[in-house]
Amino acid sequence: MTQSSPRRAGAPARRQLRAVGVAAAMVLGVGLIVACGADGGVPTITPGPPGAAAREDVEAPPSSSGAAGDDGSPDAPDETAAPASTTTPPPLPEGVEVTPSVDQPNILLVMTDDQTVEAMRVLDRINTRIAGEGTTFTNSVTSYPLCCPSRATYYSGQYAHNHGVLWNALPTGGFTRFSDWETAFPSSLQQAGYHTAHVGKYLNGYGVGNPTELPAGWDDFRGLIDPSTGMFFGFSINDNGVIDTYDEDDKSLYQTDVVTDLALEQIDAGENSDQPWFVNVSYLAPHAKFGYTLEKYRADPSIVREDIEQANTAFDIESPVPAPRHEGSFDGVELPEKANFSASTPGQVVPQWRPEIDEQRTKDITRNYQLELESLLAVDEGVDRLLDRLDQLGVADDTLVLFTSDNGYFHGEHREYQGKYYPWEESLAVPLLMRGPGVAKGVEVDSVVANIDLGPTLLDVAGARQLRPMDGRSLAPVMANPAVEWDRPILLEGFQPPAPFRPQYQGVRTNRYSYIEYTGGG
Image 1 (cartoon, rainbow, N blue to C red):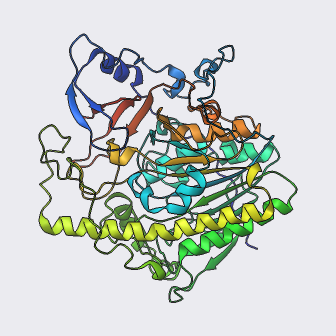
Image 2: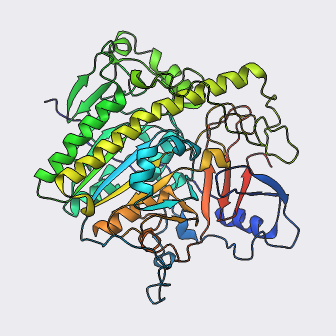
Image 3: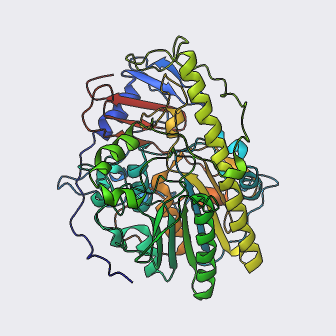
C-alpha cells in the first residue's frame, strides 16, 4: 500500500464579513429584499420601506455566527445560539411520533451533487423510506451555493470566510485550501469512538497533486480522484492508499453503482468493528460529466488546470450520464413552468447582462434536465439498497439516515441556463431529509436550516465534542419536535474571483427573506 503524504499544516485564510451591516440594512429596508418561496420556487422583488423592518423578528446575527474576530480567527461559538435549556419545549403536535433516541447511533449520510429540491419528485424510494419515515426540512439552504465551499462548510461547520475555501479551484479554493482535517467533524467522531468511512466525491481538486493522500478523520477512505471524479465511466478511486481504476469501456461499472457497492462494504465493516459507525456517501449525480481518466491526465497533465476550472465554473461542457438501464426514462419530460424562467416577467430577479433564453437554448436546458433526472434514478436505487442493508443487519432503528445535496442548480431561471453560485432560491435550496433515532416521523419543518448545521448536529447526536469553533448549531431539538421555534438568520456569501458579470456578494437569509448586497452595489 502506498504511503500517504504528511498532513498539511497552516490555518485557512480568513475574511472579514460585514455581516452585522448587511443584517442591519435588511432591518432598515435598505435596497431590495427577496421574498423566498417555501417551495423553493419563484422569488419576487419587494422594496424595503425606509424605516420599517422587513420582518419584525429579524435581528443582526451575533458575531459568533461566523464573523471573524479582530485577530482574524473565528469567534468561539456562542452558547446562547442554541435553544435555552431552561425553556420548556412545546408539546409534540398531535399524532406525531418520534423514533426513540439511542446513545451514539450509527450515522449514514448521503449527499448528491447539484441536485435541486424539485428533482426529489423522481426519487420515489428515498421519499418513501426517508421522508415518509422521518422529517423533511422544506427550508434547507446552503450558505455558499458552490461545490467546494459548500462541502468544506459541511465538514467544518463553518462559513466559507472562516474555513477559507472560497472557490472550487486554486488559488482561493479547492482541496488544498482546507488545511486542517484534524479538526473537521469526522475527526471528532473518531475521537468519540466512531468507525468513520467515506466513499465518492471529496473536495474539488482532491488527488490532483497526490492521488494516494489520505485525509485525517477516516478509518476507511475511498475517495474519487480528480480529474476523474467527473467521469461516470473510467473513474479512479483512492482505496485507502491504493489507486483503483475502473474500466471506461465496461458499462457495468457505472460510478453511482460502484459507489453504492463500496458503501455497502463500509456499512458491513462498521458493523464488524464493534463500534458505532459513520458512513459518508457522496454521489456525483446529477452533476454534469467533466474531467478525464487518470491515464489521459498522466499523458498530458497540462490539460487539467484550465478544463477543470472551466468545468467547475461554467458547467457547459457535458450533461450528466445516466446508467444505461435508465437511458430514455424521461424523454419528453418538460421543464417545470416557472414565472422566472428567462426572467421576462416584470418583478423577477434577472442579471441585466443576460439575454433572454431562446428556443434552442430552452431545448438544451430541457435535455440536460431530463438527463439529470435519469442520472438520479441510480441514486434512488442505491439508497434503497443501503437502507435494505440496515434492515438485513437489524440496525435500522439504531441508524440516523440523512439525505441532502451540496447546492441546487439553475435551469433557465433568472436567465441562468446552468450552474449555481448566485444566492437565488434555485441555487440556495437543497433537499434535507432525516430518519432514525430522535427524529419525528412523517413531518415537515419549514424553519430555515443550513449546511453549517450538519456537522454540529452529527456531533451532538454522537456525543462528540467540537474540535474547532463551529458557526452552525445542532438541529436535534427540531428533529425531535417540529413545533420547536427555530428562526435565526443564515449568512449567505459568494467569493467568485474577480470576473466579468459574476460579482461577489454577502447577505442574510431568514425564514421569509433573503437580503443580498453585491460587490459594486445592488
